[in-house]
Length: 497
Image (cartoon, rainbow, N blue to C red; front, side, top):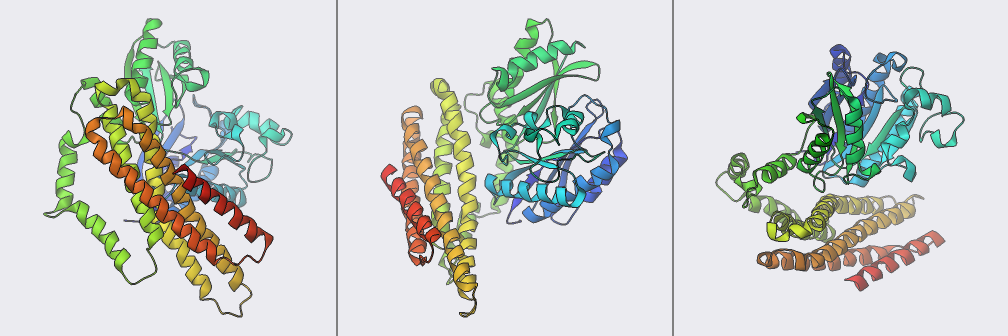
C-alpha cells in the first residue's frame, strides 16, 4: 500500500474520438498511477479520466496528460454542449490517504507551474488552491470560455493567470488546476427536449441562485433530452437522493418527469448507501448490513483480529528503539481516533428519526469530523517526517554554514506539525461537546471516550510543540516572532480546552 494516495480527475475537451482519449491515457500511464475510469460524452464533447496513485507519480501523470492533450486537441475547432477553456480543461487533486487537502493545494501549485513552463499553457488555480477568493468558484475562472479568455487575458488584470504568460495557447487554451474534496458528477435526464426547462430547474437547485448547498448545476440538451447537469461538492451534507427528489419535484412544475440519471466518473459507496437507506426507509440501516461489506470485513480478518493487527503494527513501531514515530505521531493518531468516535456518534444519530430535526447540524458535524480525521491521520507520518528532517540537519558537519539554518528550519517544521494537530483536536473536542445534547444517549460512552482522547491528544501535541520550540536558538527577529506567535497560539488552545 503506497504511503500517499491521491485521486486526480482531469477533464479533457474531447468526447468523440476514442483514439485521442487513448493517447492521452497512454501518456498518463506512469508507474505508481492507476486508471480507474474513463467517461466520454459526445454531446458535451468532453471526457473525464479518473486516476489514483502516489503523490509524486500522479503529479507527473497529470502534467504529461495536459501536454499530450495540447498536441491532439484544437479548441478553435471544438464544439460541444459543455463550457470549456482548455484542451485539458480542469485538473483537480483530491486527498484519499496519507495526504491532506493542503498537500493537494501544494500539488496543484507545482503542476500549474510545470504546465506553464513545459507547454506554455497559462494555468489558473481554483477551489481550495485558489490564490484569490474569486477563483475558488470554477465558473468565475471559466467565464467567457476559451474565446472570452483569449480576448481579455492580456488586458484585464482579473484574467491574469497564476502561472505563465498572459497569452493563451493558440490551440490548447488555458488550464485550471485545483484541490478539492471528492465531487460527484451527477446528471438527470427529463422527458422533454425543451432545454429551457432544464435551465430553470438548474437555477432552482444550484446553491449560487438560492438552491441546495454544495450543488452546482446547468441545463443542456443531451441525446435529444433536456439534462440537468450537476456537480455535488459535498455529498455527505447534500446527499444525492435529496438532489434527485428536488429535481423531480421541480420538473413536475413544468409538466416534465425525471426519466433517468447518470453518474460521470466514480462515486463513493457511501453515497449509494445513503440513497438506498433513504428510499427504502430502513430503520435499522447501517453499512454493516450490506453482505459485501460484512464479507470484506470477515475476509480481511483471516482468522485473527484485523483491528488489533493494524493497531499492533503502529504500537510496535512506537516501542521500537528509534526516534520516530514518537509522541507527536501518537498524539495525531489519538486525535484521529477521537474524531472517528465523534463522527460515528453524529452519523448514527443522523440516521434515526428521533433526531431528524438535527439532521443539518449532524450532517455538518459528520463532514467536518471526517475532514479532521483525515488530516490527523496524515499528521501521523508528517510528524515523523518533520523530526527526521531535524535529525538530518544535526548530522551536517558542524563547520557547515548551512547547519544552523537547517536545524532551525527543521525545528520550526517539527513545531508546526504538532501545533496543527493541537488546533485540530481542539476543534474535535468542541464539536464533540456540541453533539452531547443532539445524539443518542446510548452513545454517551463513545462520545465521552472521544472527548477524553481529544484532551489527551491536545496535551500531548502541545508538549511536542514546547520541546521543539525550546530547542530553537533565537538568532534572528524572525525566530523571535515565530516563537512568540507559536506560544500565543498554544496558550489560546489551552484556554479553549
